[in-house]
Amino acid sequence: MTELCSFNQAMGKTDANHVALSPLSFIKRAAAVYADKPAVIYDDKTYSWRQTYGRCRQLASVLQSFGISRGDVVSVMLPNIPAMYEAHFGVPMVGAVLNAINIRLDAEAIAFILNHSRTRLLLVDTEYADIIETALSLLEGPAPIVINVSDPSYGEGRFIGDLEYEALLAEQPDNAEWELPADEWDAIALGYTSGTTGNPKGVVTHHRGAYLNAVSNTLSWSLPSKVVYLWTLPMFHCNGWCFPWTLAAIGGTSVCLRKVDPQRIHQLMRQHHVTHYCGAPIVHSMIADAAVTQTTTIDHKVSGLIAGAAPPASVLERMGRLGFELTHVYGLTETYGPASVCVKQDDWAERTLEEQVVLNGRQGVSYPLQEEVIVLDPETMQPVPADGVTVGEIMFRGNIVMKGYLHNEKATEEAFAGGWFHTGDLAIVHADGYIKITDRSKDVIISGGENISSLEVEDIIQRHPEVELAAVVAMSDEKWGEVPAAFVQLRPGSELSEADMIEFCRNNMSRFKAPKRIVFGSLPTTSTGKIQKFALRQLLRPEACN
Image (cartoon, rainbow, N blue to C red; front, side):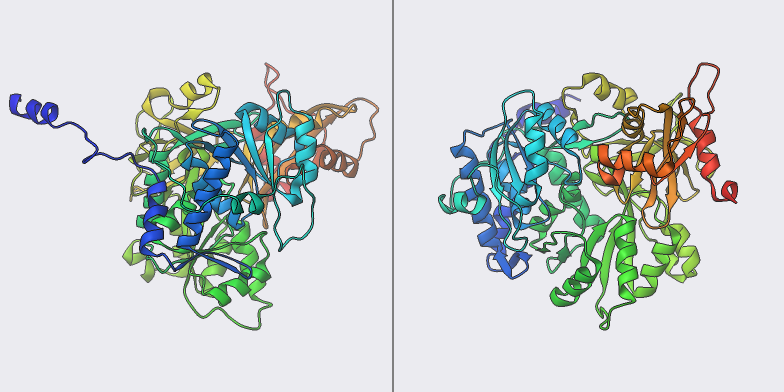
């Protein structure tokens, strides 16, 4: 024991044997090793790794010129364009925290995020000028500095103020000095998730976790340096599941895509020989639908990651028949995106396609560098048996778990109770140890990969003067996986129609959050007055609708 203690005490950390883990290391190496290789392609523009590294350093210099430094929040409202990719490196280079805002949110939600995060500077694409200007008018404190990003491929929109991204970059040297964070526990990003409340929660992630999950992506998918990755997944979603950093780690190529257009996706896959992409089930479904109209087929192997609600068997089957190889992953904003993967076993290839679909539809096992994913009884905190029947809650533990929720100690403590991160997702464990989600204890609706808070939608519905009570639950949808459905109890004498109610919702929230179906009538409640949502879900089952 004495000898062991001497090893631990005498050999301390030095600059020679300890460096903070940060994905910023990846781009420095990529610029040296893959200097002239394409890093980012967007329409007719191609930036090499040397150029991309230089542009990220220019962005860091711009931020410093505006006084942005360690711990400051820089928010971005951008589609998948080069500036969005560059922000994932340029912002943390000065020690600042990147907050990528969902471009589908309404002005009220954006204003809350800007207020809550205390955003110092905002990069915004000209397409979103109107909604950002409205959000800025709702701010309680000082407005952030606004830098406009003008995308020639879009060619519309307008400026807020007169600061422009490319012009500011051009004023800065492309070889500015920067340093890795002194502490790998420093925050690298902030991402807002709707969770189970109307106001979103700010998930704080750190350099160490981003580094490890970027590498975990590489290990899980066996990614080579020749990867050509198409950005069908929004980079605002869990920082693109850490793939901006993954691609720098392997010197891969990013093909940017401003918006999801299945015809354009097929074109880009053929043109650039795209090898990998990610997305929610709806994205894969759109690609499969578009394949029918293509005159030229994709004749090379394409691999995709699929996540969101449990992927419909029809999507997995159709993509399989097209020759696309899909891998199912599962995770949350709190776990940097994917934190478990349905690892394909060698003998699965011998099964029928139908059997493979069932096997691949599970949430699987832990990501390579995530310490553990487990299903526990939330009351006893003991593992459930691997019998494929007993239901428990999925929980994570490891380095790829958030620091916590910004300005919300209570929620953080609840999330980490018992030494595990509680997902709120209910699941079973099969005999082979693979996890399968059965239900969601949270009332979050995952529609096309986007989280929708049922409480937020209920709150807005109940603002209508003729509504007495409302409950929103998930309804299965062939295209989006699931969509909101609202059960509404009207005030006596009301003649409000379903069309009127849907129109009211669309006018008062982001359109993707608006219920696709309204059912009027008295709501079932418990003796204490709590709405029985399980009963409402049963009413929406296909057999109940026949």
